[in-house]
Length: 154
Length: 170
Image 1 (cartoon, helix red, strand yellow):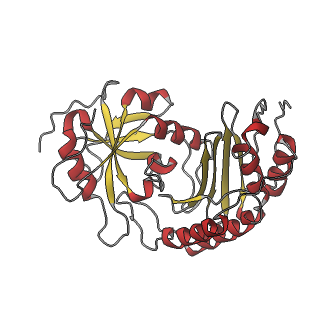
Image 2: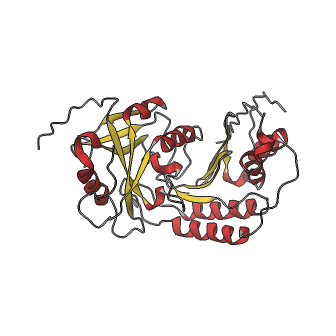
Image 3: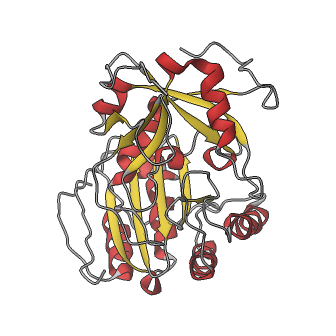
């Protein structure tokens, strides 16, 4: 299927991360692991909200949850592409990645991948905290609804 | 007290003990109320976060292994003996568990793996304290360090340090 989103990501774009139960502390605030990379990579899956819109981002966010896990979808967090770059990370389009879709992107932190089951470089925490603090969290008031019914994401 | 040392240390206990001594050697404040309950909740959180299946976050996360869970429970028991409040428990995509603390004065995180740990602490406006090493070298002194750094705000004011610990046995 044709993807008409430009591949370069402009600094002005809003980048969305799906927020799950594990990303929130008991007060409902984002935790440092919100932008932790996938195992074996330094990449974090995100969505190009400026092109996809809130409804499509929600559909994809809900779609990643494993039915057997005790992890629930809770909402969306948005961070500017410029804010990602300001902390020394990069965000790039990754529509052609395995199982990815038009609008999928990856944040890359550029640090060394740890062995499976072992910790990341502790210095990465600085970037993770900076991104967490820059991100605006939008709780989903009605997760079962097919559409986004929460506050306007901007 | 101004610190401007850069120290390389190869043992976790030395890392925590040295950093703790260099920051402030002071009596610790007792945390009252529900501290016991908070630690019980943290143990329960480790149990719940120890997810046996992979891809639990829908993005390729590794399962949290029994070794990681056992290491995290052991560390929690050690730091419970100190004055630091109970941490938040967070499962990470690489199959590790993090013990996390955050206050207005700063943040600290102890990430526990199968055989290694990574420690990060930063008081506001001070450089980060970084340490890594083997999990069997961990001890409760990390709890003392976290307590002094981010729960005793007045004691960290004016402290500047560029302590960087790098274990060469990892």
